[in-house]
Length: 74
Image (cartoon, rainbow, N blue to C red; front, side, top):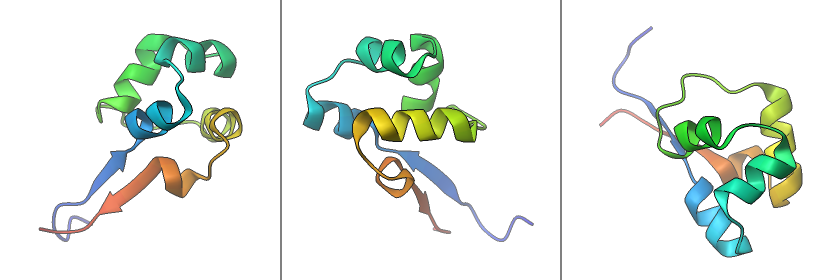
């Protein structure tokens, strides 16, 4: 399946800054740990549950494509 390097980029920092919200506040409102959100924010997550993705998007008022983008082969 590896046809070049693909990377999913998380834009959580930007979305939080735009909404003047802390990671801790988002974690509390979504119902996940700050550690798990930090892993996502720093690009180290290997997966995300749809329920978590939905909750993040609802709290931030965004769509999944605002939060995550895919970088193609370089």
